[in-house]
Image (cartoon, rainbow, N blue to C red; front, side, top):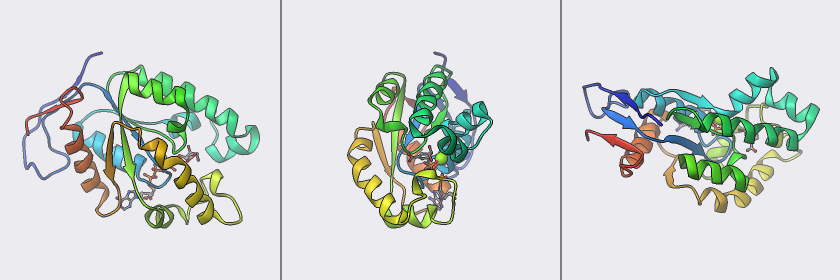
Length: 198
Ligand SMILES: Nc1ncnc2c1ncn2[C@@H]1O[C@H](COP(=O)(O)OP(=O)(O)OP(=O)(O)O)[C@@H](O)[C@H]1O
Ligand SMILES: O=C(O)C1=C[C@@H](O)[C@@H](O)[C@H](O)C1
Ligand SMILES: [Mg+2]
């Protein structure tokens, strides 16, 4: 698989300016609200590689929102589509690929990601996650009588699985751009994934 290359010069503190060559797809994993979409998109800009989001691809292919898919066809159908979309996106050239919060839970998905990409867990605690997701009704799993408790239980069940990711980056303090720089720095510790001039 050919690597994606970028040649840019400038201030090394600036998330948008880096000389880098991405050799594997960077797969962002973690809870809803961790910032996979926001930080993944900023990271892709910073590395000058394409950005893909499995939730968006599922919605595009179905021409329906995730909430609509859950309501009409149920979660198992959504998970099947999610695995198919992941398999397809992982076959492409190296990019930043943000997943949905549950995508890393399936063993088959983890195996695909391990074999074809590098996983980055964006880690955040319950208060941070709740603050970010509480005003949005777009996440069907949180449509419960006590969504904060639902989020807490999901976090408790999922954190040990996210911990199997190749790299982990704290996603609490700092802006989206600062998180993207942190992820880039974590990736730079893996020359099999990212070559930089830094
Ligand atoms: N570091 C950050 N600082 C401030 N706001 C953030 C940060 N990271 C993410 N956000 C905001 O939190 C919200 C949720 O982020 P985002 O949609 O990227 O999460 P996600 O991990 O993709 O969730 P999902 O699994 O539901 O797709 C967005 O409004 C985003 O802009
Ligand atoms: O955490 C989850 O299981 C989900 C997170 C979102 O990204 C969507 O993929 C969907 O709402 C399910
Ligand atoms: Mg997202």
